[in-house]
Every structure is written in structure tokens, then in C-alpha cells.
Image (cartoon, rainbow, N blue to C red; front, top):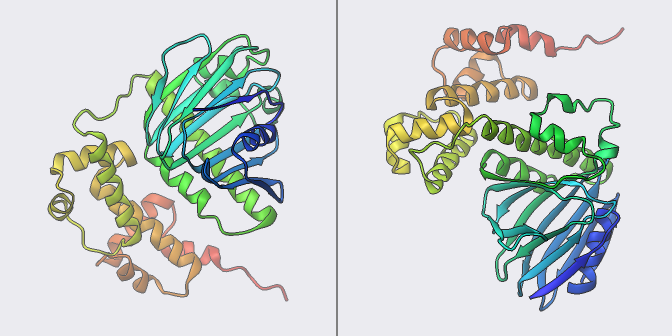
Amino acid sequence: MIEIEINAENSKEILENIQKHIGGTIEDKWSEYTLNVDNDIAKGSICYIPFDWGVNLIDYNITFSSEVMLKMYANEYNPIRFIYTLNGNFKHRFGIENKEELIEQFQTLIFTNKSEGINYIHFPKDTKLEINSIQIIRKRFLKKRTTNVSTLNKKLYEVFVDTDHENRFAHYGTLNLKMADLVKKIRNIKTKGMLRVLKIEAKVYEILSLHIQQHNKLQQGVPLPTSLIKSELIKVRKLGQTIVKRPAKNYSLDQLSAESGLSQAKLQDGFKFLYTRTVTEYIRHVRLEAARELMTTTDLNISQIVYTIGFTSRSYFSKIFKEKYGVTPNEFKKQLIVPVAV
């Protein structure tokens, strides 16, 4: 096992500490620092991006050939960490504990330590790791004018305002497939320079909001659906992604049930859990979102759009469009027309 001691004053130093033990080179592009490694110890990359107000991202996309233990000291740099495992797994414990907690694929972890405490992050060997870690420096973040921590639940509020690091906190979350889509979107951003950083920052705040929402639900006692196991929820998510890609297809519960091997009852439970909608409501939502996108980006008329997204009745489409967006499709199209100044 490779043990890496990290006594850093910022996230960039974490990257540099890791580099000293596993090699590789650090590339800097528009304040996006990437450690690229391709040797006998590891293959892949670890990326660090700092944002304003004490928020930063460390994104792991790497495979270690030996087990790696990060021994992270909590000094003045002792952020709250919001971690999501898109692929692979890892273990976490505080220095005062002996038992490690396993964080599996699609699971979340929120933690911070007391001042002078030690955090242990244990990565497995020969496992492709795709891990998203958002880190927030409390003293700086609380100075942000739009930060309203009073809207957090009581437990997270206490963690955020503990700027003297007097308490340790760990929340081992449950399965979260919505977050997987956002993490993948970060990886698929192709733009460069400042625009790329701004797009990533927007997704980071979306991911952070999902961490907080999940914590709120668990504090309120909202459980995972007991009728489905993890692999079945993953099947439901794949169906949801298929519907987004092909909204015009004529879907039915019978067909989706046969395709997934799940009962109609399990499909409904899965869609309600992942998308807070029934199957029918989700299909309608996806089609309406696709219609609005087509109105914004193409010259298709309303009738063409109706049939392109899989509806057969223009009047029905107009009715549900107005119910969802507050305007008719024609009114929406008119709002997109910008008068040309003479």
C-alpha cells in the first residue's frame, strides 16, 4: 500500500503531494490544474479547479496499481467535502476510528473533521476510479452575498457555521443516480478557457444542491424505494436516458416493462424515486422540454414540432404546454422574436 501524507493549505497542494508519490506531470490551463499519470503506479488523471468564494473541485479519473491511502491532516485548510463516486469505490474513516466505511458506486459522502484531526481516504487497486469531490472553505463561502445557510437543515447549518472547526461530521449517503448525470456532463464539456471553467462551476453548484437535497430527505426519513434493488434502479435510469434521446418513440408501460424485465409496479416506483414523476408524466415532461428546445433552436413550425416529439394532437400539445410553462406554444415562439432596431 502507498500511504500519502497530505498536510496542505489548499487543494492544489493536495495535487502536488499526490504527485510526489505517484509521479506524473501537472498541466495548468486557465487555472485548471491536471495531474496526468501513466506509469507502473497509476494511469489516468486528477484534476483540480478553484472557483470563487472558497469552492473548488477535485475530479479523479484514475486507476492505481496498488492500494493508496490518503492521510489528510485537518489544519487551517479543513473544508467540508462533498464526494460522489461515479465509478469504483473507496473507504473513509476519521483518525480516531478503526472501522472504515465503504463508499460504493453512485453513493455520496459529506464529511469534515475537527481541527488537528486526520482523515483517511483508502482507494483500491486495479479499479477505475471516477470520483467527484467538491470542497468548500467555510469562512470564505459564508462571505458570499448569495449564500443563505439558514435555509439548510439544522445539522448541515451547524456544520457550515463551524468556521473554527470544533466538530467533526460525516454523512454516508445512499444511492443517487441523478448526480451521475451531472458529473458526466462536467466530463463532456468540450469548450476551453474561461467559458469551460464557468460551465463547470455551474454544474458544481447543481451537484452541491443535490448533495444537500439528499441529506435533507434522509434527515426527514425519506427512504429508498424498498421494492427495488440497486441494479433495478440503474435499469430504470437507463430507460429514462433512452426516453430523453428518443422522445418521439411510442412508449408504453408494457413495452418498457418487457424491455427492462421489471414489473410495471417497479417501473412506476423507480420513476417516482428518480424523477419524481410517473412513467407517463416523465415521458410527457421530456417531450415538452424537447419541444421547447426545438422552438428555440430551429425554424420548425408548431405542427412540425408536435409530430417530431411524438404527439398526435396539436390541441392537446398546446393545452399541456400552457399548463407547464404558463404560455401557449405560439406565445412562446413570439417571445423569441427580437425586434430589429431601425
